[in-house]
Length: 117
Image 1 (spheres, rainbow, N blue to C red):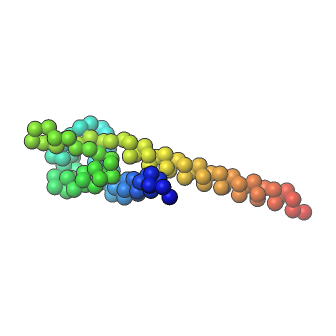
Image 2: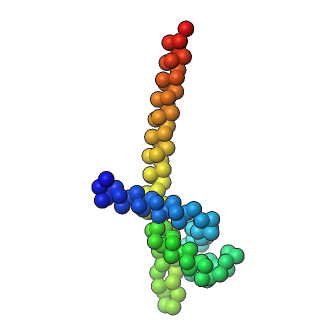
Image 3: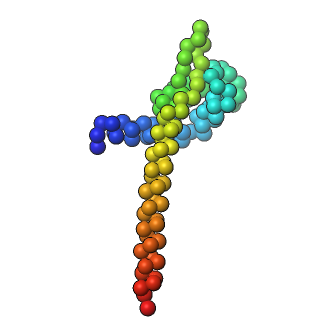
């Protein structure tokens, strides 16, 4: 495995780990709807503390799903779609591979059915 492909796999892994938590998925949804917002604003829309939101945002940031930008005394977070796009491409390739495998199994089964007495 090349360093580039290893890095891509690790990126997908970190995205899937980050998305495994429903609160982090909610945070991404809120950021997608509201654009660039602070952790305080996000915490007002969820039943968790601001500190918990910040911890979740750190996981999303480490996975490349959000970025924070300092504006004065506050940090505003926004969605970074590139990591999601890379993960979606990986999932689409995986699905296409399984589709090919299933089509091959179907073709073999149909051929065996035609050839049987």
